[in-house]
Length: 310
Image (cartoon, rainbow, N blue to C red; front, side, top):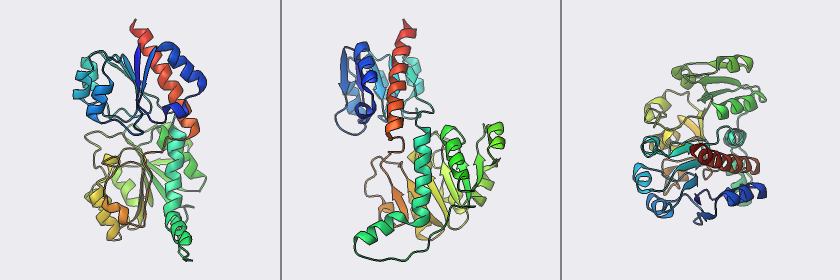
């Protein structure tokens, strides 16, 4: 059994027992040593002769899947599967698994961290202080502000619960909203227009699909109140970054917190020159607790998928 492991943080996050279980199951393990997701061509080369893959954010396109003649299981080390062509995998009989909920607390906490950083201009003040400047700035409080959550899944729910500790008013827009959860946790279900109109902070927690790509367009972001802040720890394609840049420069948006980008890693983004944009390198799920959980569940899913296919 030959297994490719692509996530750069897998070895660091996997406990000795998880690594032992994987080594016991597979006599040939191949690890990604590049420190970042593989490109399409690199993935095609790495998958040669592999029976399964514990997959990070690498592009499992139709081209990749059709070239992987021995591949039987793709076990995602994470929640999203938008980087996997599910139709192509289905046509080849390749099972696709994921690790839902395991990293939701980690992602939710980073979402809140972005809000605090932007509300109090922490990165800018840190940099200015290191440079010897003594800047007096006026921030805003999260207390009693309105948080809009676009996508009330596992991460959105945890973000809402943390926000309640700041006495924030929480709105949520989700076509499949869990109404009982919303009622029990003081979350007001609203339509998209209301969410845009009333949110001081908007946190995105959607998968990337054709109908969600650029859901935050120039037109939709202009419908937000002046001074609103957008947080994206979900998928980069949800925001039209060029439009967001223009709206920050014009003063309509007060800031962005971005863990994900239309191009990863981003190169020469015009957003880099803006003080009120905070960046992290697609690291929302990278806590010790979350990486350990993702490693454990991805290996369990991989083994179970092969066991069921026998």
